[in-house]
Length: 471
Image 1 (cartoon, rainbow, N blue to C red):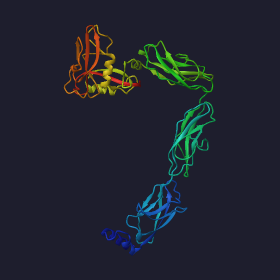
Image 2 (image 1 turned 180 degrees about the vertical axis):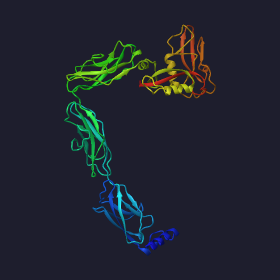
Image 3 (image 1 turned 180 degrees about the horizontal axis):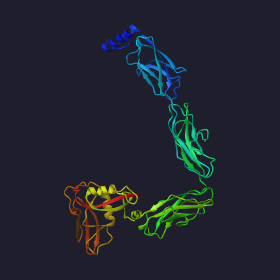
Image 4 (image 1 turned 60 degrees about the vertical axis):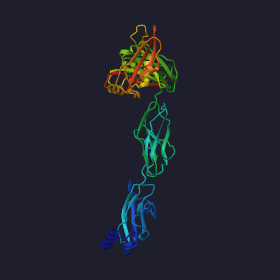
């Protein structure tokens, strides 16, 4: 036998043969390969599994394992070449390759071959929603069926942390994908645990445990965000009552205080009607510019009072709400004057700025700068010109935009005051006409250089802009 193996190996090395037949015909032109296939997961025999002789494209011969996972397959070497091998498994498992061995023998036993076959399904539990006094909605999402059809799925629940299908459960179809389950006949004000499940031929798998508590009969209420028009003495807010808990809502509004988690007993309140749905509230006589205010919506029915999540109005938020605004590009934008600095310092300050609870600030681009100046104007040296303008006419302004016609070094802003009119040809090419204001006997034209990061070492004025709603 050793002699036959040596001769066969020499044949392959010398390139004498391109098929098994040239050498193997002398020492056996066929061999019976046997083996036992077991499932990697449960170590049980893998029955009815395909075993074939193939080169990846062509199949020479095929068979299947019996009920004990055993197979026998006759390999005729004069019908195949050196590219062929044994392939154990089909689409239901991870296939295993075995190269031919034991040349010169009439029968070769490959022993036990482990194949990763079907597994239990992979499933996650969806959050519990639409929770009422006696019902809730959950569900699951089956992302992998374990290479075996999911024949049952749903959710199970109990008052214990790890419910199974032996507890209360729903049945919601078959197969992979997301599904919804309605949980009913629950007890009022009780904590429940729910898990999604999926069953295939291997067994039943469960998703993570989700906990929820049924309503105790009181209303379900949320606190709305504060409005944009916070002033030094008023705050606009409100609430939304999505469920009355089973009895009518007789009173609703918001409570507030300068200490956290105000209640009807510990804070001041508004009274804003009755029933479910959205409502608005106006808090008056506050000094929000120098202290925090804590606000919660409330709702009252026969079972008691419920509160929404706490909303905090800070001095920072007050300042944010009272920033000047512009309209540009279909958005309303808040404007924050960052200060005078180099381009890079200004850009970094805008990109990293957190103000009013928001971190999506950016350095104003050319169009936004122009909108600022067109909206609020510039201060002038003329005492009889309009007041209330935004920036001094002696400043230049950095922008995040590349201004394509800018070629030279940084220069001063241009300001002309002449009787009569000016022509566009008089405007320097790297500047933009922003606004004309009529003073006594004069037309004043302001030409503002909107500069990009060229000449970035100069100190110029910087504005941060935040788009906060679509117009």
